[in-house]
Length: 475
Image (cartoon, rainbow, N blue to C red; front, side, top):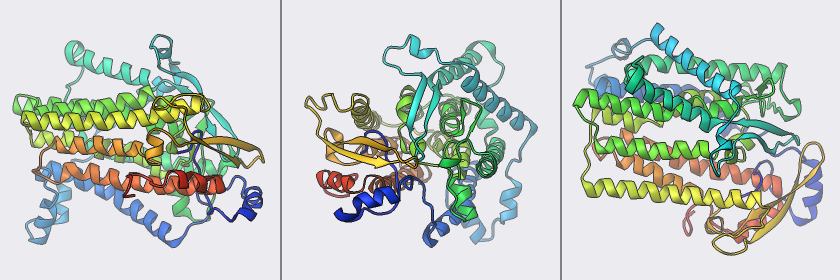
């Protein structure tokens, strides 16, 4: 894994042509410049089907008690028509629109108007003004890191309301879940369309824009690398972290409150889902500065994939376990619950330690100890569009010597734990582990294509030293 950044483009050439390739392709790593038919077909499929997939899952819970085959069987046997299912779907409401507008506005204010103070009194936390990675055009953006602060203030307000203020019911999110879905879709499409127009007519950095000539690809994958409004409002950082991930734990709390309201108690399965997913969310915000060096910020342009995905896909499909447990209050046996907890915690340990090793290696420029030893490294270089040569180091020790993306193994273990907490009654809560396995495998391939294009011969040396992508001996 690259210690400082990890981009993309052609394939590495022979030894004789490496130097000339780097000069000719400077700035070409990053998002694709050309679109093949397979990529175009995949993008059109996602644009057409992803919104329907989200609706189908949420509707199946609302009308069929989370039975994924229920709507299909009813339509196939003539017991229901599509129009009947749609007629039972709650529409957007004024209350939902007001709630969602207030929510997004509140998160924008926390992001833009309240400089971070957590880093001043929390030992080990890095917040405030931080620099991102070098972009393909050679730009280094600065960010206001205050996600942990936003999460804490939001949740303090939530608990203050639940126990003292009583401004709204803790079940408010569940009670407006489908009307809020339409609001999230409106924002997702609006911000994606705005980003597309902005990239064409008034980009923040024109040198970091990429146009393929294909409208669908440009719309989905984005034109502009780091769209911004003003000095600090960065679209990628805001929508990747807020409002979706801040909302994740609030959504789960609302589901737990609804389970208590309907069934008189909160099951240990619901507690496990809330705790394990909260660990992931808090980790995300505690390490938000580290997140600036990940694939989402370093390499993805901002389009529908991130804009709509962060507004709709993330909050609605990443929380399916909690939603399922409202309809099916599973109470796990003690051994089952302990097993799920251990799986989740071990997965988190691998995920966190692997990422900490890479971050420590990056911050110290390799002058550190990994597993008690001086790390093994591979020196490499790359060129940005401004003609500048940059030097980087690839880590070949610790978890990064086991596999090139071993942090994803921990991520997958945690994802499986969320699903196993729901028992084995339905397929729906297991969508998450299936999706994450596909997503992270695809990310492995995308990241390695970028790295091969960026580092050339140096990347070949690295893959020879660490031959497995994800699972040693398998993949």
